[in-house]
Structure formats: structure tokens, C-alpha cells
Amino acid sequence: MGAKSQKTVAELVRVQAGNPKSGDFGYRTRSLCVRLLVSLSPCLLVCRLLVSLSPCLLVCLLAGCGGPRVVPVSGTATVDGKPLAGFVLTFTPDAEKGHEARVDCSGRIGGDGKYSLRTDDGFNTYHGAPPGWYKVTIWSPDDKTIPVNKKYTDIKTTDLAVEVVANPKPGAYDFKFTK
Image: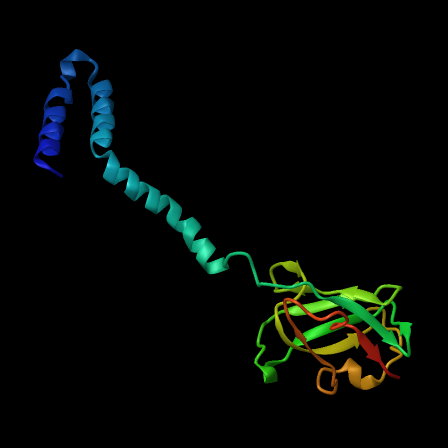
């Protein structure tokens, strides 16, 4: 605090301390506090702002901002040229090819054989999938028999792999399963 600020504070204390006999000691004390705050305001306001915003900043840093970057992924799934309606395609990040994201990417196949992936990161769901390599499997949410070769139902045996990219070629995410 500069010399002028010290003088101002000292004067405020002397002038505003009040006289208990006057009966307005409380008013003068409150006035003193307000004036002290005003005289210290630039530094005090910055400190208060930092202290009050620090929990918000901490939450943003810990939670991250915006979630994973995803790109749209959609295509068709058929077996012997017929739609695989009612089943679910799952894209599992392929760690062997450097994709170690911890997400669940899946999409239900519609009656026409079309699907669109959604990604669940454990906190939110996003339309699409993060770029990278994936192993592809198929499963039944209704425990129906899946009319494809069993190797496509297990992450350890599937030979279907696909790279999700920002600008895929047409049909890049179409799958033609065999029995």
C-alpha cells in the first residue's frame, strides 16, 4: 500500500471511529468498513475474483472440456446381401494399432441395414466415433441367433478392422458379413 493509501486509511480510522456518546457508533463503523474496502478495492477485487472462480476453474480442468473429438460414422451391414436388422455393431479401439481410447462405440442396425455409431465415454454419449483403428464385432441385444460366422461375434477372433477418419471414402464403413 502506498503512502497516500496509508494516510487515507489512518484518516478514516480517526474520523470514522465515532463517538460512543453520539449513539451512531455502529453506522460509523460500517461506513469505515465500506470505505476501507473501497480504498483497497483493486487488489481486493482481484483476490476475491480469483478465490471465487478457482473452484470453477478446477472443475473445468479436472472434467475436461467438450469430451472426445468424434467424426460421423455410418454405413450398412448385410449378410449375403440382406440387411442385418436388429443387431448391434460394436467398434472396439484396436490397441495393437495404437488406438487406446477408453470408449464404447456402437450402433443398432435398422431394418434397411443402416447404422450410425454413438460413442459413450462413461460420462456422455456422442454421435460418431473418435478417429483411429477399431476391431468390429456384431452382437444381439435380444439374444437372437446371429446369422453370421461366429468369428465376428468375438473381439479375439474377428478379422474385421476399420480406420475411422474425418473424410472417409464412400462405403468405407459398409460391412458385408458371411455365414
